[in-house]
Length: 242
Length: 242
DNA sequence: CCAATCAGAATTGTCGACAATAGAAACGGC
DNA sequence: GCCGTTTCTATTGTCGACAATTCTGATTGG
Image 1 (spheres, rainbow over the protein chains, first blue to last red):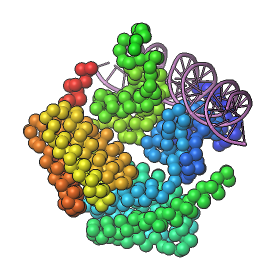
Image 2: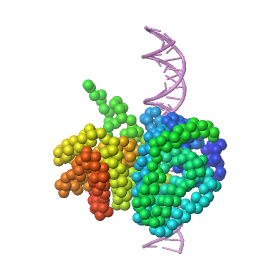
Image 3: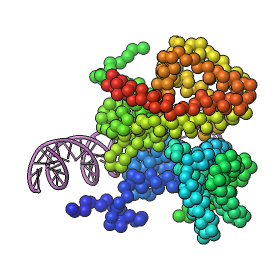
Image 4: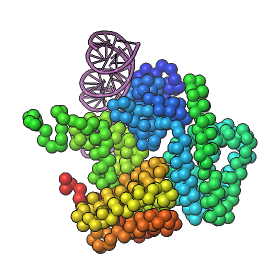
């Protein structure tokens, strides 16, 4: 079969002969990533044509991706005015943490109730291994492992809706969590809490596990404020470096 | 005021002259409503051009609305195959109810902690009035009141994220809830549970209120199965009546 | 009779164009 | 000099068109 017309890809990554990744999903994922990392400044208006040019596509897939991100709360929208980056404020972080704490508690309880011994053992092993290698991970990688720990438990809960909601919260607090990870790293604080939670799960001690999980997540307003402050500094500094 | 000649428009509201409602939001709301009420059959493929014709718009706003509904879990999507109505199965209802129970518990607890006496009194009054008029309401109206009761509490919690998540769940279980309301009505079961919850809230008795709320929401798998069964019957009967 | 194959039809994915709206700049009256 | 108005520009909202893909169903070989 003959290769159909290639439309004007001059720079960027593309052009590797094969193009297995559909533009729609690719664009969505790319913009999502940008929003998660606050590559748009808080409340910044997002110019569709500029973004389209940047990603080498037309406005249609851009708009569809943005609309989708609107319901994910990563982007906001005003009719006839367009799309904006979400804000970045303390209240939101605190409120999301509150919801998250409740859901994660339920998550561990269900996981303890439903997961097999093998699954729980695998969780402990995986985290132990992760801890052993912790120093070799970048902050981004470590953050990803942190997120994965919680997601794994959510999966073990056997309730996909619960897992999905927690993933949604995760994407929204990804940025602050990354900052927290770096803060921890600076202070050389080890992640003993995850280990303790996993141990309580293996022991099928639901109350202890739930309590540990709650305390692990619960963020004081003071902590949130300092983290958000550091986040703001980072946003307005790192920008334009790429 | 004289009404200028309306040319052609056979069905729908149409065209120019007075058009205060933007098509984008209108289309979104309309499709959303259809999805909530299962006007699309479960897992049915949604034809974009047909839907566009039905709503007298082009495919662009249709697709944008659908994409948005995808992340609301009211619609599913497969690349190159298009959009589908979500399924309709017992597991989902059970899982959502589980999550909902947890969130609603948190909701009442926070509301008890943060709402003023006046706000709680207003809640009681409003529900008492609603009950008094219950017989004059249609099932749809009664369902809306039921939903509003819970949403009001969520708002009183002072945590907008919590409220938003509960609203998301509500739209997804709207259909089964409506069937439950009708079931209740057939059996002449009165809604005493809401009143009891509200009373416990006024008394600032968090544990009691939380327990009542949990029991109110918790759905046994058997109940869910019968409700879903009735829902399926309704879906495949009422269709085409409009 | 069934399975695989292959055209034709239907549907989705993406684009560029144009109209409608909002935003910015220039203007003028006070 | 300042505020409201007007004009011009930038951006969004929607559309129709075409390419790419999937679906349908008829055909053929076993």
